[in-house]
Length: 263
Image (cartoon, rainbow, N blue to C red; front, side, top):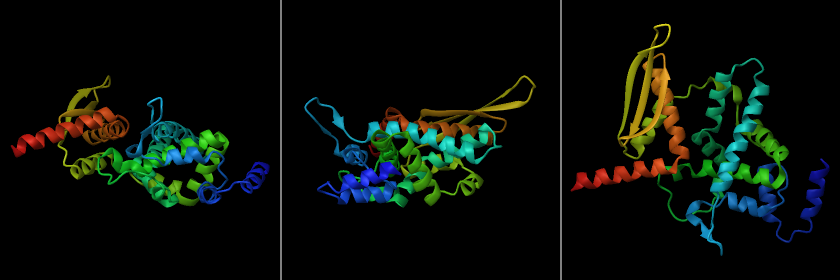
């Protein structure tokens, strides 16, 4: 492509070539505004403020990258599976863009080794640091080179090299088990409750609620308790990932209970 040739010529006039070449090996093309990628790999633990007191880290790019990633993955899946319905495509996209999957992709690409952070990372939200940085990296690509190159990165560097769509489609995602494992890891109390009702055809319908440390985190409906629990757990995992106030509330409640227990 002519654009790539121009970028390669432009690199000849750059004094410090190593960062550009390192990013090129990950992206598959040359970056332009390298500061965007530096920001994408800056964890909030290293946030600093400028004269206007705005804190600088990768969270805003993570927000942008999340939206771009979801749209591009949806487009790729739509084209790959010409006869599949919405439910299948939605479920498969969720498997691909879930936090554990993005953590693995970040490691496969070597992004995890480039993330800058202060000290040990231990809290629930920060255990997703690599996946968050991956999303921020996608956001940086979009701002640096636009949608076309963003799509090119996801398709050529991610899907073609690190993801087998058909293999992932065959994997059954157990959201309830994932939530339980997360709660057990951080010793959070959790509870699933169900209520049964009837639809217009008098078929039993179940409504599940999931609580973590007594805080309502997700709800779900289904024609079996297993299905409603899965949907509730799926919503809870999504909220815990995105809602920092919810996560802080869970952590705060857990600490208070542990203190009272020790007393």
